[in-house]
Image (cartoon, rainbow, N blue to C red):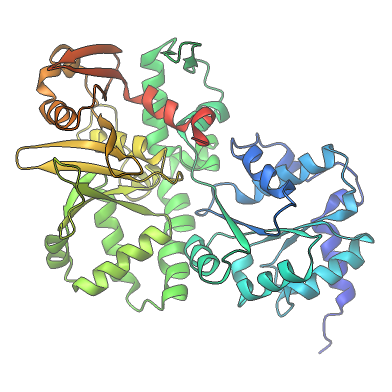
Length: 461
């Protein structure tokens, strides 16, 4: 049996970078997609050469990392960069197995006929010890800008932080925000940001219909745009995203033996998204030991499937021995993949709508908490650098509190305790401003709040 010659590798590398033969053109399958809102931020890192660092593009499966890479390449080409200096390599191809990044780079230079100044290694997790290879490339090639990406978010994050200190810059691409979803689907009644900072909405009922659709289907670009995927989300999202993470990515990375146990735990947490979970009760009901439960939760967070939000008390102090956390899916449409879609008036929609709102900011560095004490609670609390409350939000999918704001007792009590003059609450359809006990409550529809948090104006804040 003959060995595959490296000339075949070179032939394949040329097909992966079609702009070498057709300058200024990436593949139509990428050019036809509308760029995600994160393209300018990634492009800034791609062009940054004053700091010698590789960019590690993190993110869950199917959120558009490969498409984003090709949009960045298209921008470099539009700016007049030499086509032969830009290379794309999909590391997961069997043809490349056994080749180091260094050797792939050498063959890429041969294939392009130019000195490579940008190289994009996709699906990097398929290369054993990729982080060691990457660190060496960064050190040995000061004029080379390297971007790597992959779908095993947990693996990339773990190895990037362990081995890439001072050499790698992580860039997290989250699922679609609500603002992006409206743009991608061409929604005609998008909210408008006025010059005074307020938001106007042409048709709040239509926006709510879009928000419910987003909560059920909108986290992934293909699911958002494909009627076929919407018709059978369990087949697409569950098998192609959830199962691959739970049954392949995590077991390989963390040597998990009982994948069925992990799968059942995730299903239970998905059902309870947006709710407070008592960990001792969860351990008992699931039959999982405390240490194992702790590891499973760490795995699921690292894989960007869930986020645990920790509790503070009335004094905004973190409870060091708290047995409870709130659990949120990082993408609300994961619930639809496991269970039935929810309508606007279904019981579970309240928690799913809150999940959709909180998910808008999971990619940001700011940490979110919730407050609960003896007889009241506040859904979302943001602390400043000193650990003092600077924002408090009560999430409602109802208009009843617009006319009865005094019933927002936990929000008002928390604001008074910490001298917050302004706090926020959401409604279903109404904007309002109310004052109770010296506290001003700014109320806007939950869908508008989700749009505002996820809009491009907010991404960098």
